[in-house]
Length: 371
Ligand code: ASP
View 1 (cartoon, rainbow, N blue to C red):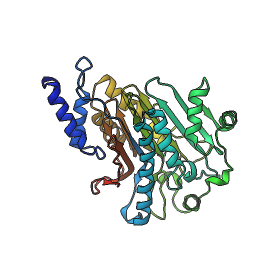
View 2: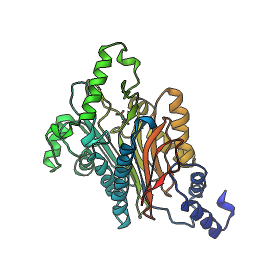
View 3: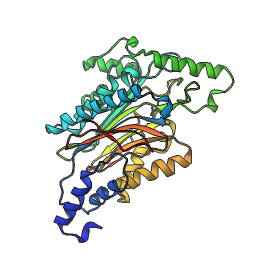
View 4: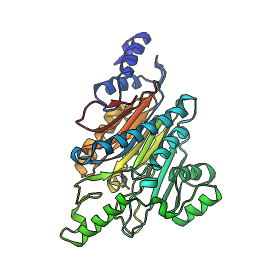
C-alpha cells in the first residue's frame, strides 16, 4: 500500500505510527506493519526501530485475584526487565545480550514461573527449561530438566556458543554448566511458598473429586486462576538483528520428565533474520503446532504482516485446537505483535524512546506508561 508513496510520505506515515504504543497491537500496529511490507528492492525510508518486547506468562488472570500490590509488583519487575534490555540496546549491544538481560531480571524474580519462581513438578522438585536463538545466524541453544542452574537462559546461551549442540538436558546439561562457569545453586533456592502451596492444591485436587486430566493445566482449584508464568523476550538491535529467548519452570505438577514448548526451537522459541517469537501457554499445543516457526513462516513465505501472522496462529489455529496461550513477536522492521487467546498476558515493550509500556489484561485500560 505504501509502494505508491514517495519515500518522504512513507517515512512520515511510519513515523506517525511509531509514535503510538505498540503493546496491544491494534490499528496502530497494522500501520507499522504496512511499512514492513515494502519489498526489499524498495528500500524503507525509515530505519528499522530497535526495541524489545517481553512476556511474563499468559493465562486466565482474574482481576479480582490480582491484588493491587501484586499487580504493582508485577508491573515493576516487567518495567525493570524492559529497562535492562533497553540499556543493552541503547549502547549498541546485541539483541542476544538484550534478551538475556531482560530474561535474567524475570528469572531472578519470584513472581514469574522461571528461575527463582519456577513451579514445582509432581515430585516437589523444580525442573527448569530455557532456549535462546539468534535470528541472524539461526544459531540456537536450549536446555531442559535443570535443577541447579540459577539462570537457565545463561546456560542456553552457553550451549549455543560454546558447544556444537543445540539442546542439552538434565545432568548432562548441568555438567556442561560446570565446565562453563554458569552459576549453580542449591535446589532450595527455587523454593517459594506460593509455588509449593500451588503444588499441594494440585495434588489435593488430583486425589479428590476431579481427575487431573479434567482440570486445565496450570489451573489452581483454590484461586480459579489458570496461569502460565513462563517468561520471554524478543529484541531487535541497532544492527537490525533479531533474537528470541524463553525461560520456564514448565507446568505445576508435571511428571515423568515432561518438557514443554519453551526450550523447543520452533515451538516456544524461534528467530530468523525476519522474525522472532517467544511463547507462553499450554506447551503441548505449541509443540504440536510449531507455533513460533509457523508465525515466522507465514511472515517469510506469505509475506504477511507480523500482526496478522501471529494473530491467525494464536486466535484461529491454536484456539480452534484448544491450545491456550499467547506469544510476543517482532519483525526486522521493529513491528511488534502480542496476541493471546487467554484473558491476560503479562507483557511489555520498550523502544528507542526508552518509555516502558506494560500491560496485563486484554480489555484493560491502555498500557500504563512507566515513569
Ligand atoms: N509454555 C510453558 C510450558 O508448557 C508453560 C508456560 O507458558 O508457563 O511448559
